[in-house]
Amino acid sequence: MKATKTYGLSEERFESLIGTLLRTGVILAAAVVLAGGALYLAKYWRVKPDYRMFRGEPADLRSVSGIFQDTVGWHARGVIQFGLLLLIATPIARVAFCVAAFASERDWLYVTTTLIVLAILIYSVSSA
Image 1 (cartoon, helix red, strand yellow):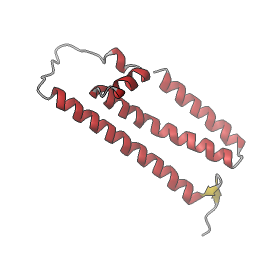
Image 2 (cartoon, helix red, strand yellow; image 1 turned 90 degrees about the vertical axis):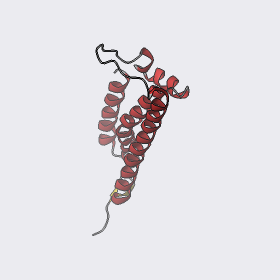
Image 3 (cartoon, one colour; image 1 turned 180 degrees about the horizontal axis):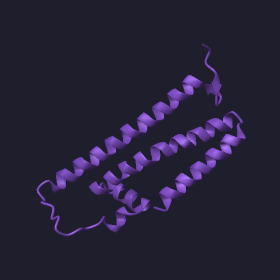
């Protein structure tokens, strides 16, 4: 059976690229979360948590810019949160890749539809 052309690439190549993108994103996110967890345990391994009172996340971990600042400063919680942001960004990157693929094929209906989906995803992540 002959492979059909999809998005300027062979269908098998396109699926392979998307699979590699998703796998790489998940592995990278897991590695960053693991590094953050190791940093956290190295600093707080003797601290006993007090579960009698709820304490939410600090204000700097409630925004993307705060997470980036904590990650650059090698604060453990910021590194963990950054890994989770990478995990969230992985399927968003897949949608962005599909926009580029549809555009290379000049399939404007799918480009428009996928751009709408991408805009909704970006809006939902940025407003959270």
